[in-house]
Length: 439
Image (cartoon, rainbow, N blue to C red; front, side, top):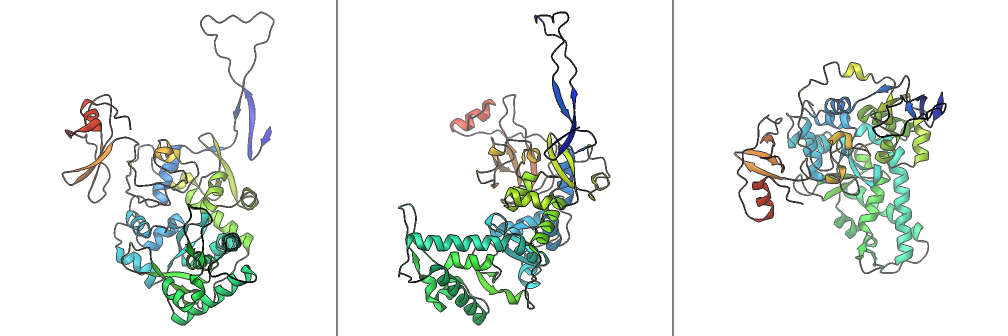
């Protein structure tokens, strides 16, 4: 038995293959060279198909969730950098939910909170999970952002100049802003700049590609990450990026609980494997933004076991019975289609995602790992015909095939695309001839 990292297996000789035609025969008395292969013994294998079925069921991609809170808990957190993504991610998983229901959960019942956390990204969390996330991720992030702001002020200078210790000046400015927010109850960045004129301090650019900026935006971001301010109601429609800042006491009147940092990290990692597992250690490292050392120390205390993820070593919770969860015939189950927005948690939940889509990730994701509104295949076009959205990829073998999604986002129909694809230009000509336009 050999122990390599976290994988346990046994080396066995690979069966010798017959000599190829024309190969020189093995000389008598000379042992044939044996090649070795790695076989894992006693480790469960989770296929790609089974992982996809788990994602469909756990993330409610069939649209069977009943409330926005159910959706958020199923995926642990929703991306909230783009305000519209929150609403669209919920509506894609809950057929009976409306835009008003999502807004009421965030700003009426206040059961869902927008919070800056992993990878310096804005997420939507259940309010009960925010203390865990704050201790495990946001507090270290706020300290790093504060150090970066102070370093930038020291490097670029300010207009007007700030005398004395810049770190102390930033801390004092945070106190004044917190007092202004408590006095108003809720305020925008512009209103706070009026109450605290020091927020209008300009950070001049250091290189020609930079632009001057005031201290307002980075300081409010730091205060939000440190748990002193909460992003409240938007200024305008549900797609608006502008919002009011509220004191944290409005959401936690008795004060936000502060759990132990080690326990908070373990709880967050446990939640990740429960929602996205089985997954690799690299997946957890990417998703949390933690260092490899922090991830290794955290995973050591989790009740996990190793599984074979189609050639990679993965982890799954010991109490996570995959066979019981997929009690139906996963191989014969009908396929499921879901219309998901950009920055959806399902499409960005793992570092290695090729198994989820079946295509090269470069055709769907950018260099930062974010997905955009791109068709499921890298080549082709999306057109609307007879009140249906139809994706028509080019095919050199004849007429392009397509999958259809109707206006309500129902699953694809087993039909073929019969569009004439008339038009002008290289792409239209290539489609008429059944060729690859070479994009």
